[in-house]
Amino acid sequence: MALTLVAGSTLLGPDALDAWGAKGHRLAASAAAGALPDAMPAFFRAAGAQLTYLNPEPDRWKGRAEREQDPALDGAFNADHFLDTEMADSSVRRRAFAAPHRYAYADSLRAAGIEAAQMGFAPFAILELTQRLRQQFRMWRSAPDSATRAWIEARILDDAGILGHYVTDVSNPAHTTIHYNGWVGANPKGYATDKAFHGRFETAYVQAHLELSDVTPRVRAEPRVRRALRAEILAYIAEGHAEVERLYQLDQKQQWGIEATSAEHKAFAAERLAAGATMLRDLWWTAWVTSAGAP
Image 1 (cartoon, rainbow, N blue to C red):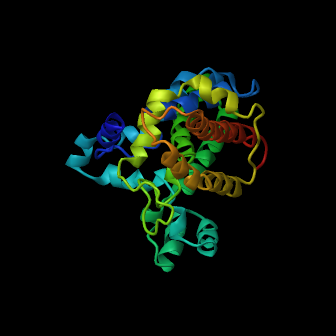
Image 2: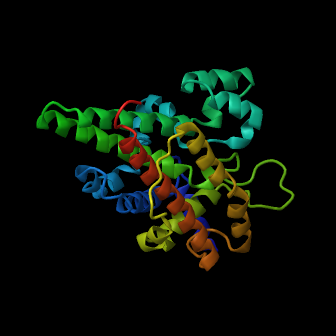
Image 3: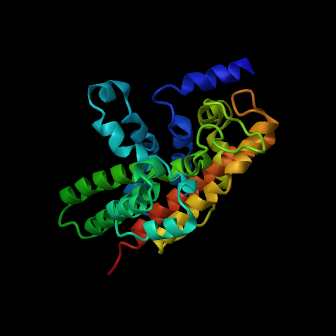
């Protein structure tokens, strides 16, 4: 297992906790773009390569050179990548997620003795970008001329690509839990505690074993309009969180990494990436469909 551990520990340097690594993000985005319905605007359907490129973008903002000059950028967005669900009980989470915006969410958590920057802002990152995308589609529909419409299209694609990053982040169960990089606290089942765990799964394993052909067949064919956005986003994150123990159980059977070769491991990783791709395609579709007519 030496090669696996070296790969994992190398990947878990200062910039390493990036869900799915760049390849996983690209796979999910490409699968989402390939599952768009024909009724999506043509400019959007034609932008699959651009949307795929943009999906890892928020991880690119974590460059060490910029962080060493000033930590402002890195510190501003880190918490958008995750939700450590166990930090708050269900009643506290319900109150916090009902807050009108991320700042009130942070206030609600702080009143319960929890720092939002430690628990995570992922639900609001996804909600905010979906709303921005919907508003831009409204503007696109009523653009006064072709030049303005083209400028709006550029903004739509940029925000749609960035939205994709946070959506696919939380399809990885490790981005929904305090056990994001090895099991912490009481551990009666003896799950892995090594600090290479995160990278062994999402980067080393995916890089070595997953391709687009593993993900696309698992994406739901028909898009859904997610009208109750908050509830749908929270349910989606909860679905990923429900797979945390399964992630660790598979690691006990055969350690995640480049040497893990079981069909069970591959199916799990592909299904999680496909869940992210399905949700992303649905949110793009939802923003377009619900931008028509009165809110």
